[in-house]
Image 1 (cartoon, rainbow, N blue to C red):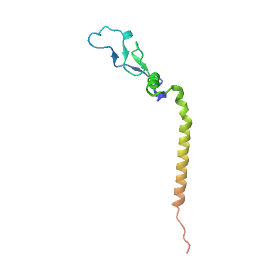
Image 2 (cartoon, rainbow, N blue to C red):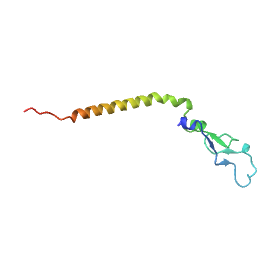
Image 3 (spheres, rainbow, N blue to C red):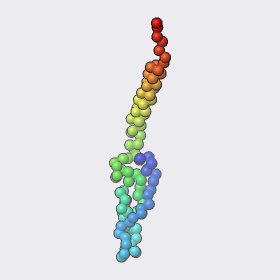
Image 4 (cartoon, rainbow, N blue to C red):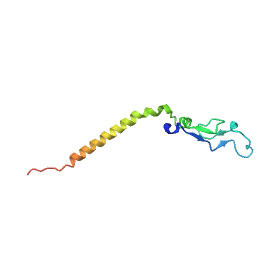
Length: 97
């Protein structure tokens, strides 16, 4: 998720205050309602959004790689073992009379 959001800057669709009586307010006096928005900015940094919403940092992206690779390796070994056992048990048996 941090890898995907790292380069995004979302444009705010809802700034407050807005509505009747606030037509002449500049962006300096408004804030976006999205998590991670800073006052006076009409966009939200993707990295800041992910950090404040989920507690994920871009620097944590590669920390999960060993876990993913280990999980994938175990899956491949398990699949191979299953294939070997299946081929051994499905081989024709020879009966001696």
